[in-house]
Amino acid sequence: MPLMMTADEVMTVLDRVFGQVAGQFAIEELSEMQITVRLKVGEQHLRPGGTVSGPSIFGLADDIIATGKVLILVRSLDVGDDLSFSEGGQDPVARASMTYSIPPER
Image (tube, rainbow, N blue to C red):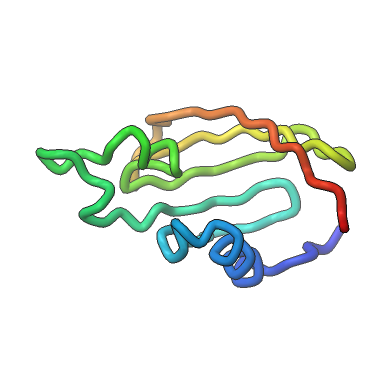
């Protein structure tokens, strides 16, 4: 099944809908049931000592790359799983599971 949106189109929507974090993320890979997104780590994400803060990690992650997979997708519900990796790392540094209620079309 072909994708309904390109990575650039998805970023445009995300920047519009989540304007408070616009420009902080970049999509590195997009396929039908998976996405890889990078947090563009800046000074605002760091704690003293140069480590990335927990809220930033869960906003996406460290100088991190997160790979999200859709586990269940039905008309009104999306269940996904996310593994976050430090750049160049092989072991995940964070894992998140999420459920998103898809709003009805207006």
